[in-house]
Image (cartoon, rainbow, N blue to C red; front, side):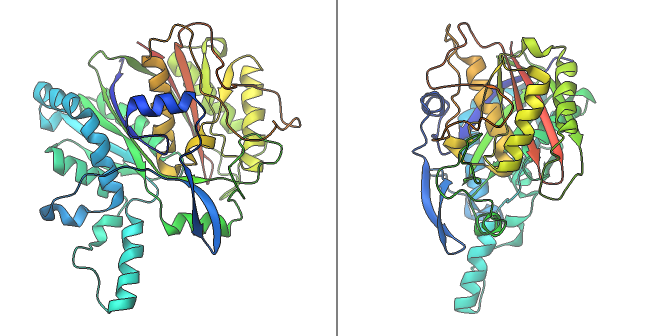
Length: 391
């Protein structure tokens, strides 16, 4: 069954609308990475700078930044959502999201308030930090009665959500699914990655010679997936699990290669038919070495590739949906020269890594971008690769 991504709502460090994100993405703008303190040290984070919608008092148990981000993204696709509801009915529309933090920051604030005042804040509810809160909130807010749930597999979470959403439609349980992910900044992740010594000392440097860690970011990206013809096809998905190590990737990259191969086979594409690859590209020493090896092995040095995390930070559970959003923007643009997303790392490329065709600022494909592949890899070896195509 051919499924389409009909619309996109997106906010990240690059901006708060499709056009703003697209323009700053292609310009290689990393000004959205801002300084904050975590674990006693300063670090750069990819923060969203937007006036977020309020959540009504009657829905206060859902009131957290993560759900406000979801509401902001939903406002960008509200017209398309209402069309799906009118055509298929609320019981035939689902919600599948990915996250790794949900509203954990609200619990951090609540515990600080408790320590100072011996009582929790009046509007605090544990539901705000539960992983399933985002899907429950959107379904309740919109009035959807179809399946609604959240997937949390660390940094592949929102990619796995696409596989699950597609399955709901293919099984005949839904006609349309709101699918994507959201993760918001919180002390848990900032301090956690700092404790792992995985935070960059400045701007992260994907595939750079002097790369030394990530910048953590926040983002939300929501799509409508359906059988209704739309501008972009969800063409192929490949998922694998190597279970090599809790936090380190398998340096041999065999299961990452397999995930990309499965996605290509599912899409009916050869490596030569992919116009652009959005790499996972976290800017850690081990990930970039593993991924460059895998991509070089399967695609060689010809296909244009880049990591967009030098402009957004690593948005964790939202990363897969965010970067699929970037691919969606390329595929829906009418640019005949096919401008591509540059690999921003403020560094020289690491010559010891297998060679790839890293996109430079203002680099063009020379024709419209027709197909994109996006990679996301998570702690514990949860790998996913997704192919999108211009419809």
